[in-house]
Image (cartoon, rainbow, N blue to C red; front, top):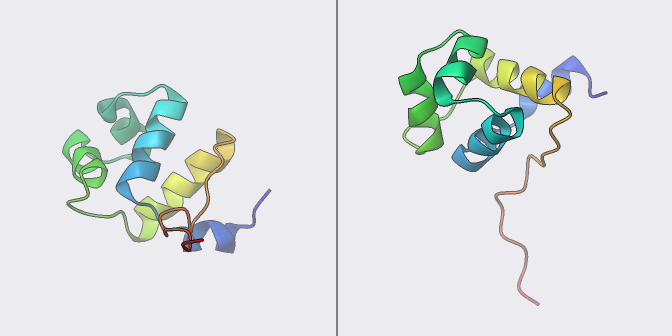
Length: 82
C-alpha cells in the first residue's frame, strides 16, 4: 500500500477521474457524495474545466487506493517516438 505522502502527490486529470468513477460504478452525484462535494464539481473535473487540488486530490487518491484502482501519475505524458 502506498504511503500517505505519496497519495497526496498524485495528479488527477479528467481521464483518471472518469476512469476511477467508472471503476467504482458510481454516477457523478454518487462520487460527489462520497467526496463531500457537488456533482457539478465532478463534472467540471471530468471535462477538464478544473483539476482537483488539496484535500480533494488526496481524497480521490484514498478512494482509488481503497478500490484497488491502478493508475499511473505520469500516464498523461506521451511516450517518446520510436
